[in-house]
Image (cartoon, rainbow, N blue to C red; front, side, top):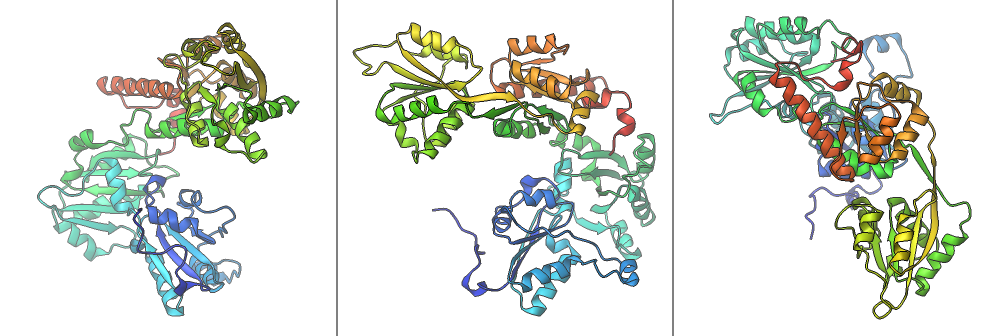
Length: 556
């Protein structure tokens, strides 16, 4: 039995027919830091009111059609000017709750540390509107953890949290007199001023300091300095002045933030592909697990379909074959792609069938993704190649037809219109009759948006993964040739040859014809590149930063 939350969802009878507000902490920025309760609350929301910084973090967990009114901050100038169209968050929350709707109010970090959220809770209490609070990972705690900066040691170091925007002279004096760790929430262009306040209040200028921007995201960057040198570090590194100076940062002051410790503890920024923009030229369904794997290496995957899948022009052959599955026409069915599984599954659903229709039929699958798609359908493959994941590998393990043990001699092979004849010829040679059926057509996808095409040709991507020769041809055809600074990774020799024929330099070759092995090979390449830079005493940069003007255009 699964454990349940003591909070209820959907709403308990006591709340039925009334509005309800969930004040939800969305964390510092990494969507993976949302709590299980947060995801549950988002799924039941009628209205989602989120700060712009976390809207994309939470929106993916809300149901389709959820209302997301835009937040507009009402400042004193707007109020004085009497602009009637501006509405603040509190008004939006109360208006929706009065209408009997389930409202999720999402804030950055934790709602208990957000003063505006506290005021909105009081407004709900005053009107008798039921509400709950779903805590989140506080920015001042989560960001140092991702930066590799522990806030306490075994001796129980005192930790103070300061918001530089509201800190007064007394606050600076108290933290300046302390020898504990100070976590300062401020902006990039105000870090030096905050450091000056601490020094003026008694902290030594040589006290270690770390500053992290865009914490917990793949844009994260951390600088090591001291209270006395941070302004110089920013100036020498051309970090400031910058139009991004207003962006929030977390600065940690104290011995726990010493650079020597960060070298060992900076687990996030030291990932092998940290911050790399990786182009994945596959359909969204095919790219999902590959993109998840790339994210685990710190990369930012960008999915660009190069092939569109369409039904066959004449569906009658496919319809007869699917009916033949049910009537016992086949001994085997062989799937060579995820799209073939999808095509058969869609026909099953059209006829009101499910995985039970495969009873008594042996099922073969080429490739881990194809096998996974079958398992998701409720079918466990009887045969998966033990060696090379290809048609040739499947044939090596496929048993010859034996009239004594095989009551039926026919194989159903649903495949693409452009598939090779290797498998058909091999099965016939083994004594099988084959119904070679076009289950789907592959056509070149539409070109990606203009900014994506420009990034491909201009070196805005750090790497591109080619999983077949057709992805090479189609990507170049719809978007142009990747820039020469982009790392080219290919799934096998045939794909690499096609890439070279298109004038591309192949940097990474997968040791096996597997998309996950290809991603691993790219991660190994990134790790070796990172280690070489560190050994040479050079800064660790991404491949895209080598293109002309990239350093000047880069934002922090």
